[in-house]
Each structure stands twice: as structure tokens, then as C-alpha cells.
Image 1 (cartoon, one colour):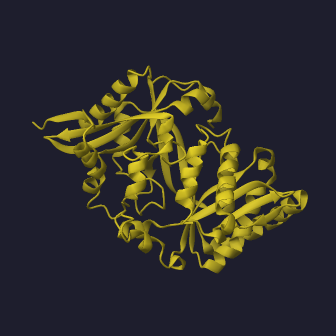
Image 2 (image 1 turned 90 degrees about the vertical axis):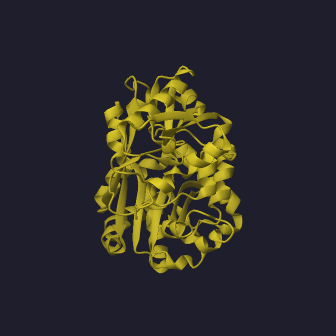
Image 3 (image 1 turned 30 degrees about the vertical axis):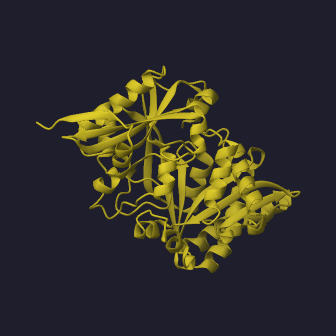
Length: 385
């Protein structure tokens, strides 16, 4: 009989084995994209990251006959619990062979550690918060994920559900092709023009000469615009600065929009090219030359992930988001983009979800966040459909 045990990850050797496990699990999977290694180490708290200024994490690894076969991180996000007056823990960075015993022992270990903190509710996968990578892929395994989206084995859903996890919320990835733009433009051009005239809206690209101001403006609007979104916790000032530094080389001004009223930014949108094929090519290694390969000839990348369309709450019901997209279309065509993914979109975000469905965008991937423990009766519940 094979022996499965779960151990806390304390030593440098075990951190390395924990980190490297996905490369073994997905060795024969053509759709898996390795993470950018430096970023992943930071999000795991193996290197310093400002998220953990107000959060705690404990890593666990499953061993089968002494060989790593699974992993999970148990996370206490104090900012979330303070905001929602909850005692909730989060599970992140889960990976496992197709073995219910191994998965169950990992979940048990995470629950036991979180229980020492007085926590009996779990949510995941969250890597490590909703501001980063979220959810378990449950539909859309036929092709690779887009930049900064999660991927996992199809059997992971069964591992969660057979343990007793239940659906908390689903997220969708919407796909569109350049051939759809003409029809979409016809549908929304008049509405966009009405919004521009109503508010004397000024639409422009991000100004790269003032990048620090621009990205901090975007992240400030991001924080303010999502206050009523299920599970959202604003990023700290330190996280904002960290994200801004990380985005600087990735952002293309042509794929951004800032909306202003009376000189004040009220909405922002940006897309990031789908760098995943190049991340796979460099195996997630930025150094010594991976970063150069990642950013070379970006005109050759023809897919964009539209990550975030954010509008201040007082303008959200007036179609400003549509105006943000409309400004970007001519630049997207000039770049030669062929495909776009709008991701991710919460099922409870009715405005964005319905707008994308109405536009003709197609849901190509679905992700799920699971809960374990007492039913959710907190303020979060009011955002459910």
C-alpha cells in the first residue's frame, strides 16, 4: 500500500519541491503554461510581497512514498475578514495527483491550521486574493489559458466536490474575434456617442510619459469601482505600488483607455497582450534573457486579454464602460489584433455579464470558486444572483 502523508513546508528544500511540483504534474499537458517564476515565488510569500503585510500563509505538501504529489497554501486574509466581519480562510496554489486521499489530507491540514486561528469557513482556490489569480477551471480545457488566468486538471473539480466543497461563485471568460467588431461597433456606437456628449467625456490613451501617475490612477479607480463587488478587498497602497512596477513593461498604451470628466479620471480600461506562448517558451524564467524574449516584437502578438474595465460608481449605469471599449477599437485594429478575451467576469456582475452576452461575445471558459463550512450569510451573499 502506498503511504500518503502531508507535511508543513518549512525547509528551503521543501519550498523548492512545493514550487516545482506543477512542472511534474503538467509535464505532458500541452495546454499548461508555467507561471512567471519570480512572480509566483512572491505570491507564495517565498519572496517578499506586500499582500502578506496583512495576511498569513501556511504551505502544506502531500508526499506519496516520500515523493511530492500535492500541495496547498492556507491563507488568512485579515483585510478580507475585517472588511466583511468574517472568520474565513482561503485555499490557494492547489495542485494534486488524481487521488482523493491526497487531496483530502491536504484540505484537512489546511483546515486544522486555520482552525487554530478560529476559522471554520474556507474559500478557494484564491491565489492569494481576488486581486490576483482566481478560481478552478471547470470548462474549457481544449486550449491554453490566456495571460494571468488559471489552468488545472479536469479532475480537480471532483477532488473539491467529493471532499464537501460547494459552489460559491462562477467566473466566465468571454471570447471575441476581430470579425465580430463591425457588428459590435454598430450596436454600441450610438450609445457610446450619447455618453460622450452627455458628460462631455474625454477619451484618451494612458500617457507613458506619466506612467506612475497613470497606473496609480487606474488602480485607484479599480479600488473605488469594485466596492460593491462580491468578495472584493481593495489593494493596499503597497500592493498598488507593487502592481504598478510589475505592469510597467507589459502595458501597451494603444490598448488602454482613460475617460475624463472635467479633467478628472472617472473610468479606465486596459488590455494586456497574451504573453503566454512566450512565457511557455522561456519556461517562466525572466533571467538572464527571458525578459528580452518576452517583450521582443510585441506586434507579433495578436491576442489581447481585456483585464479590467473600471468606472467610478456614480458613472457605472451610464454606459461609460462601452465608451471606454469604443475608443480602443481603432487602435486594436491598427495593431492587427485578431482575438480578445474579456476575463474574468463574475456571474453576479450582471451589468458586465449581460453587456458582453448582448455584444455577441462567447463564453469559452468557466472558473469556479468553492466554499466549505457554514453557509455564507454575510454581506457577501447579497452580491449573489
